[in-house]
Length: 310
Image 1: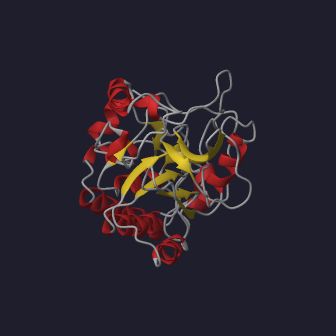
Image 2: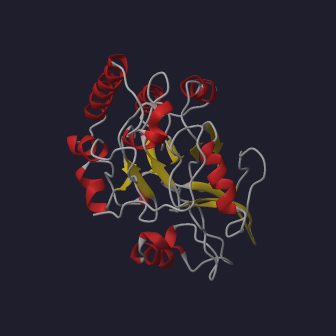
Image 3: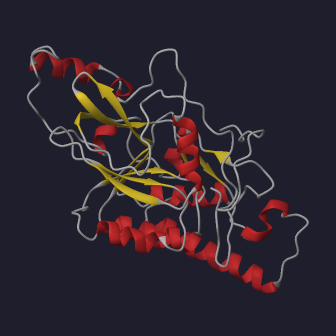
């Protein structure tokens, strides 16, 4: 994690069952499209933007939050939320981190709404029944994004998501942290913001293990990717059931699409959660970046790997 003026940080797929109007700026890609990974990566490097993904009548919709948290993010979220009823809404995160203090402010806004949180990227697919929204699990939540994830009252992390942590650092010196010079004022800022981050962690119900893991990884090392057991240990994941964060509304099942409702319900209940997620077409893969962005201004390296989860 890193900071500029304050601190800056480097940083399932749930298939919406009905036709939807997906409010993403610019091009929207089809699931499995080769341009998907590049667009997702570029969005994660831009300032965070918020979009409401409606999928009524079959599900309740969600907020897509993609990009790096900046000084403008809390205000922009306030403007986004002003004319919407977001109490108890699910927020789907795909972010490389951002400003420590602004992420804390944004996270407190999420909690005040009673928001639920998860990790993923929103996509749209073309089906015989029309356009459908889904959430791909192959996404990143890094650095301060991890603390945004923590702000949800209920938190679900899909197995394919990458949740990574590291230390906070001076953003203008993080690229060559060992060779850089530091003043007493710099150290004061670091200590102050660690204290703020610790208070936020405990206020949100997180464990001290999260701080311990994050603050053990200096900026000259790869981010530490949290294992499934560490996600539980740190209290980042509070449920293994995707329906706890994106429940679907009961709707009649078209005869042409499914077996009788009772049989379909039993089949759905017997399937693993992954079967209910959006998935990529067989034979196609969605490449992910090898490593997160280091600061809001940095590009994503392509020749490095993250530390393996333990």
